[in-house]
Length: 298
Image (cartoon, rainbow, N blue to C red; front, top):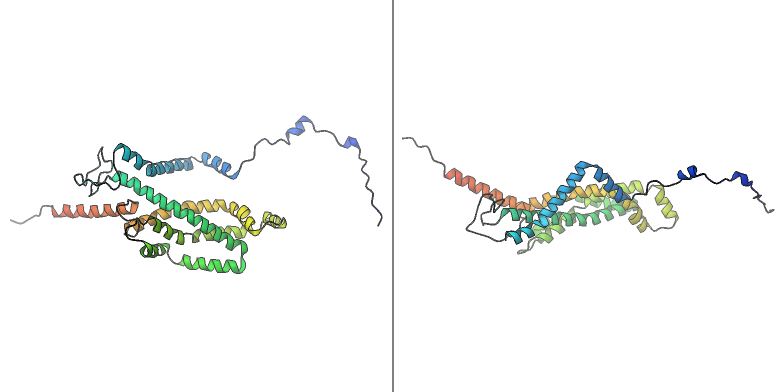
């Protein structure tokens, strides 16, 4: 074949420099904003969400710093008893009153909120890792891997989560321990199935996108595609599921402590406080009934 020659003698008049006005159209007026910066900007624009965030911060401070301040200022702890000051009504010294052992209920409420938040956040963090990885692998590989992994999830999902937690708590809870580690592990074992199903559904849609094909064409490994590209694009669904998982874990812990399978007294939790309050209400109601004057016929 003959060598093809290309004529590169171009007319210089066809190329003229851009004017100052034309150059302004190429300038980047607004800097690029990342995902978290954009999320914070949207949060600041939503007044209801911003007020909710402030309330959450106040609750966290109440739970973690409140007991320390009350112990240093007032000298109250969640376990110190005072048999000479039992069942005191709320007053300036004891803001929520005292229980039947003379313990300050305001401090015990703060400790209960602390333990409930520790359990909920720890269980949610463990479930986040397990659920995201499990659902991501199932959705990305698909086929037989997806079928086997999701059938396991379906079996676990068909049984109420509280039954798993109750069985695990009754089996592994040791005598003399607070039960904090046991209840976290029990929730971590059973609460990840919902996260896995949501992440798997998002991955099934995202893996068909062009950026995944481009990454494969460049020779990126499947693990890096999953971790660096697919899972970060599921962050919206993951955050929504995580925010719903934390209050669910709080209610589960309160329920287990209420029926006696959660934290062990004198450790304070929202469930144990509710149980003690119920016993006090029944006792006071019975005393009130027994002390009522009886109407006798003369």
